Length: 276
Ligand SMILES: [Zn+2]
Ligand SMILES: [Zn+2]
Image (cartoon, rainbow, N blue to C red; front, side):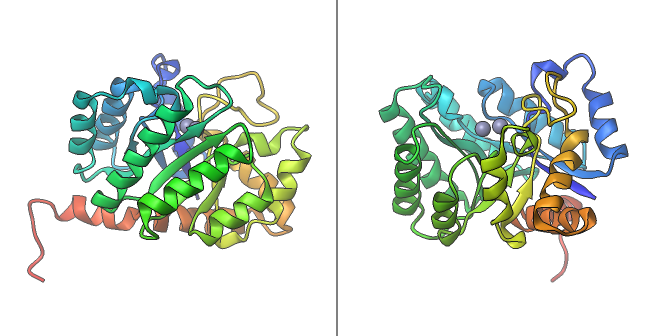
């Protein structure tokens, strides 16, 4: 069984057939997906929380994407604080730095990322991290902010990782997991496959980042969580181990990282507190 550790299933590109896409994933060996609200504005966060609350197989993460950093206002801040207290919300994110598309100024991105790392610390939440462009600068700045604001108390995952092995090593030393998407399956991604090959199995996760980045064999189409095993198959080849082992290890890592058993327990005991 697989966990799609990062997808945007509430994106409007799924409006026409969201239930079918979710059903295909669960029929195809996906046990859980983390629905990331960030990247689609305040509405995206609200939709992700609502979906997780209406389907026990789905959990949500909320936050402010670096593209949208300059849109963060006080109303949004309050809403995020409220969502972080909901028991189906298991992480903060995705947040981070994106110096590739530069849809918000660097300085604003850094400030909003620092604010969210501090928030994650306050709420003791794991963090889904987006970092892209201008390596090493964006990456170094990201890690500096993480260490300064997180003070070694936080766990993060570098989602949809496309950076160097050198940075991944420093990030893992700081407690990060590393998650790969369909990009690692692309014909032109030989260099990234070398990075993926060197990430230990106890630090590895898989994701689709759907609706974008459909894996090899599906390129040009809308991506969906049912295709997360395609990423896992490539990782199995790189690590020279059975696909089932990659499924088991990445699922185990995602469960621990997002504390899914804990989130389920909170849900099943809410209203019926255990005597212990
Ligand atoms: Zn991202
Ligand atoms: Zn994403």
